[in-house]
Image (tube, rainbow, N blue to C red; front, side, top):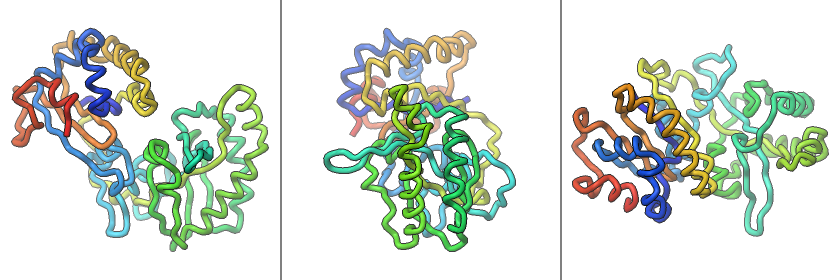
Amino acid sequence: MHIVLPGALPDPEAARALLPHLHETAPTFTGWLSRSRARLRTVDPAVSACTAFEHWQLERAGFQPDAKQNLSAGLGPLWAQGGGIAPDQPVWLAELVHMAPTQTSTAMLASDVLRITPDQSVALFESAQTLFEGTGFQLHHDGDRRWRIEAPASFALHSASPALVAATSVNDWWPQQEAARPWRRLVNEIQMLWFGHPVNASRQNQGLPPVNGLWLFGGGRAEQLRNAALPEQAPCYEALQAPFMAQDWAGWLAALAELEAQVFLPLRQQGTQPVLVLAGRNQLATLEPRTLARWTQWLPGSRNTWSKWWSYRN
């Protein structure tokens, strides 16, 4: 059994500050760490265009990018919810986001923190439909947070996952290719349309950021997911991710305490120690119980306690 924990690898400076609180907060979790062998990998978001956790998801699904794709292209077919998509059809997703200028660039909030209701998503979708007519792009309501886009056959775009853009800057990833010009024009029209939309007026009255843009990503095909049907499930618990991204370490410890009570402790009481997959900003750690471990390359400092590698990673 695997358990995946995005946001469970804080940067070393934060990890060192959190270390004295870990055993009291999550004794089962720290017990597992002390009884595991660990393998650490560094991934490069600048190359993959996705977060470390998304990198792990795509590798596990067996996504094989084409020569002109980055790894994040696989998020389209991996996350698409609607049916009727041919295996050889590129799958593009557009995430509902909030964008806001800063002093030096543009920041973005992805949909996971926007609290978009189904009614809001449908209302925004219906208003945007008319803008897509005659553009060569088609819009499908694939979910409340993300919509599927059918693009012209010749359309190509190197884009990054919304989570990575939210953690960095829109300016770092805004598509500048000539082929992306029709999409950029369409996004600008959507931003103007939604500026005074009743949905956003209501959200602002509630103190919520307006949904004022779409972020396009994906482009991979379902046939590129070589391990789409995995026999072994890997439950993913994302409670640590939001405080990790916000560097809210009090909130991070509170989320870890909830995981201890609701997930870790019940498994320990059943006599189960899972394989753990911990994801940070640009690192992945896989931890196997010592009796099962077969790794040949260990973390630096693996002969010492787990706290050495957890808080002093290179």
